[in-house]
Amino acid sequence: MRLKSAIFVAAIVRTANGAGAFAAVRRRGSEEAGTVFVKVSTLDGCAALYGPAPQSAFDASFPTDRLFRLLVPAGQPEAESEARMEKEVRFDPDLWFVEIEDRQGRSFIDLAPDA
Image (cartoon, rainbow, N blue to C red; front, side, top):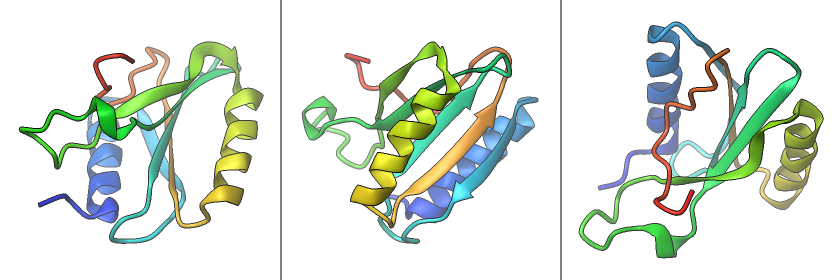
C-alpha cells in the first residue's frame, strides 16, 4: 500500500530537519494522492528541483515506492525552480511543494535510476 502524500511529505520534512537541514512545506496538496515536488536550495542563490519519476522508472517488484527525477539541475539559479513550480501549480493545483535548505544539497528522497 502506498503512503498518503501527507504522511510521505511529513517524513521528508522530519528526516531533513533531523539531519541538520531545514525543510518546510510551501504548498499543501491533496492529503491522499497529491503529487510531491521537492526544491533543494543550497543557500547560495542556486537550487535543484525534483519531481515524480515516470512510471517506466518503477521496478515491478516494488510498485509502491515513490521515486523522483531531477527537473532543474543543481547549480541553476533559484528563479528557474520557482518558474517551473508556477507552471506545475497551474497544471495541478493539488500538488505538494517541499523546500529544503541544505548547503550540501541533500534531497532526502529516492531518485529513479536514470536520474
